[in-house]
Image 1 (tube, one colour):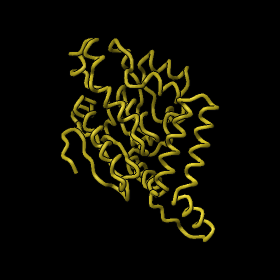
Image 2: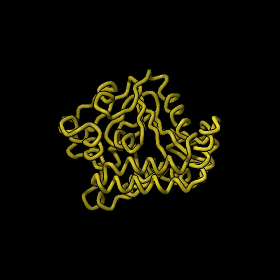
Image 3: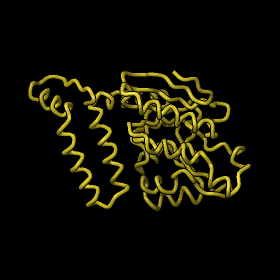
Length: 259
């Protein structure tokens, strides 16, 4: 594995990598170098056919407590507009394989935005999600106002963004922001179990399913339905689709090869 300073990356389950944010003294604050390392790790995972899913986590105290405010305090409007972090965020958003977030402790500001870039969020009971940027005189800038609204609805998003107050894991589950809430000591194991299950499915179909679900947020309904139907038809030309149906008829476990 490539050496990093702000993250740890390792194979954790069959076809699953674990990416751990590793600035514990700073509550995993997302400085530029950390985001750049996440981007590079995802690019490697994207290009490695053996990797079919990836889990992102932090530690017991924080998934990530936000951006690195000391670093951001030196920026002005011109530097923000040309900030290379935007390219890093874009690469994270566009990662084509499934991402599972395992969140304990604080997931605030950029940390909440990073979790929301993932496809499924598993939250420990200790998790707190929030967008506190308003308290520092600015607003979320890496998708917080948009993804949060799509996830929890206008009223809840307005309350969180305008007050800066976080919500706990149970409230996040009720609002639809997270998929599951588990005891904190089980958060990572549950996320890895889920990623391993997803990684056992046919890889091409998984990637197209992820993309099709995301299109529900990006396209009008008729256009998204048309996209879904074309993806559905495309998959009928894959070897994995033939193997899946053959295995079903033969009452055996399918062997998917990503073809």
